[in-house]
Length: 268
Length: 287
Image (cartoon, rainbow over the protein chains, first blue to last red):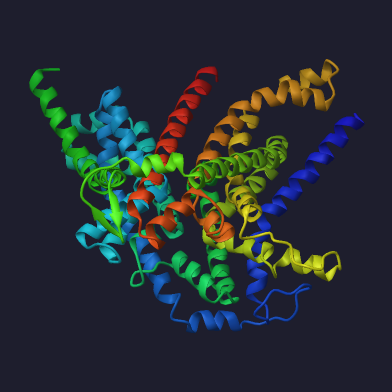
């Protein structure tokens, strides 16, 4: 039995080290944001909140942060509005090549790397004057988050039970009433999880935002990157810490719903 | 069903699909077709010239720099995938064996970093691996090095950062395979006299393969198209496909060459997606 015990302790040590590897970049960012020096020192010394004050006072982050949040909300809303009818239509289609092809198109923005979407939109938007405009940015983000909402709503749609809809119709309800009282409530779990993921994906989206904007419409991740490139002091760490805390808070909330494990393919 | 209702039904389906199809066509299909066309054009000082040419593609094959970029990008993605398997397995195995009350927390710690902004996570690695970063400062303080080690702005940083960014996907994928293993198989192996190492190699590992392979295809394709981590940790000096596309498009304004490179990435991404679909179907068949 001692061989099994050694094996298990080896595994526990290895796993602990890997957990450390996963957490350490977040930890370092948080620690550095409270540093009283503008450069990294070991061992760490001092404590200060001045970088937070500087981040708040700086004009480089607040505007992009507000823009990022508004953009995430609006692009998620657009994706929801387009996803619901699309997913309901998929339910009415016979399984086959056509249905598979349409599903492939709807998942397209997730299958095509963000970099490609970015460069394709760069050219198309330049032609129609949408580069560095909020509508252009919004269209790009709606495209990127659409597959996440569509996929989640589709799962709910597949579980939607036809006999409930038939029963509603037989009992004399009109199609709109049935949609409001039967179909929509059944879609709520998918809509909620899809919308939350879409919101996070939009906030995280760096690549496409970088390609379709210049200086006017910077979003938060791009603002962080540009500041890192120009100045690189702990102000970035302070802004980043806010995002670390926000990300972990969202993780706690969606873990409560049991959705955290279903995370997949959100980065890039 | 009568022909009339069938027709009405079809009409309703297409009406529901309309907005979605128009949206995808306008923002994805048309731009990608435009991009494809641009890759067959030539340019001069940022202006697209009339006429079509294959020069952008032939130069990708002839020019040694591009061959090197492709090779190094593929190697880096493969290395990150292998590292993710090696680092991910112990964690996935721990999760699968953990009692139910711990499992939730162990899952949480793996998935939570995915919700933190990728630029922020990569910045964390810059603080650790930079010239005056945590590793160099610690080693210098301990008197182990005189000169700072070059850990960022090169492949070392890119590989370490990429591994951390995509590791959660691998762990979740392997864990889902391990959790599904019938415990009685492991117990039988032990009862029949196999030690833990032998049980691992002969029982656990083969049963975990679907998760390992699915996770590998996912991580490999994510790393191949990754842009944030190569840009921030590798820098523009590193030869990486995504960074080369970015430099050609937004720094050198050579859109035809950038799009030709992008077409290669798109083709590989589509092939990997097809592979992923095929593998998933195969696993479902066996499950």
